[in-house]
Length: 364
Image 1 (cartoon, rainbow, N blue to C red):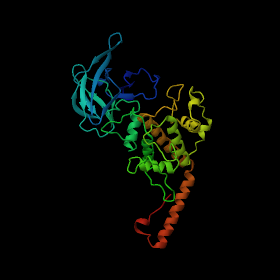
Image 2: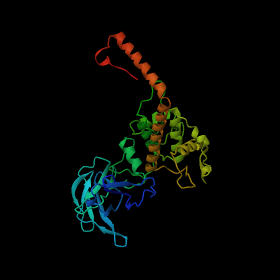
Image 3: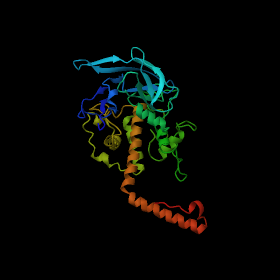
Image 4: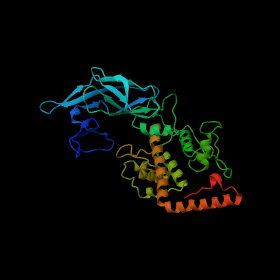
C-alpha cells in the first residue's frame, strides 16, 4: 500500500492467501482496503451463505454471521458474531444479530431483483457480503433455473399463476406457441397470407392467435390437417424443431448443426428422423444440453423450467446473431443510414418542412 495501509480479499466465504488462489466461474470475490492500519483486523466475517433467495410476496430471510480469526498456533477459529447491524445496499437497518449470530431480515420494499447484504459492528471486522435474490414466484426460490425463469418473467414472456410458476409442470404446445408469439412481438398475420385454422383451437382461447400465427408462418405443424392438440405436452425434440424453424425463417445461419456430432449420446438414435437437423443445431448452439453426460432424452416432455432455460438461451442467441451482423456490417450500415438522412433532408426541403427542429437533423 502506497500510504502504509493494508489490504486483503476473500473468495466466497474463505479468506484467500495469495493472488494465485484459483477462481472458478460463479465465485464471488470481495476485496477490502484498510488505509489506516490502526483499524486493521484479521477478523474475517462471513454470512452462512453467499447467496440467499426469497419470494417477493414475502421477502423474508434468516441469516447468520460468524467471525473467523486465528489462535496462537494460526488455527482458524470461528465464532458467532452477535450485535452486528445488517445493511442492505449500503443502508443500515434495524436488524441486529443475536447471540448465535442470527437475525431474520424482512424487506419493506422488494421491488428490485437483487440486494447486497453486509454488516456493521462495534468490533473491527472485515465486512461480510452476501447477495439476496428476489424471486417473483414462491416455488422458484433457489431453483436451478431461477435466473432464466426471472428473465422470462421480467420480459413478459412467461407467467405464473397465483404467485407460483410450477417449474416441474410440463409445457404444452399451446403454451409454447404463446410464448414464441410474445417473443415475436405478437405481430398479426399479414392480410396477404391465408391463416391456418384447426378445429380444436377455439376462438378466444389464450393460445388461439398464437397458434394461427405460428402455424401460418410454418413454425409449427398440426398433429393432423385439422387438429393442433394445444394441450399436448411438448417434447425436447419438438421444441428444438420449432425453434430451429423459427431461426431459419428469420434468415439466421443454422449450418452449425451440420458439423455437430450428437452420436456421442447413447440415445442419439431415439431422435425422430424429422428432428435430427434441429437437434444437431440446438446442441451446436448450446440451446440444448444432455439430460445426463450420455443422454439427450429427445422424446421426454419439456418442463416449464427447462423451457425457460431454452427460451432464454434462444433469446440470447437471437441477440448475439443480430449484434454480430451489426458489427460485421457497421460500415455499410453507417453509409445506409447516412444516405437515408440525405434523402429525408431532401424530402423536407422539397416539402417546405425544413427549419426548426428539422434544421439540424442528421443521421450518421
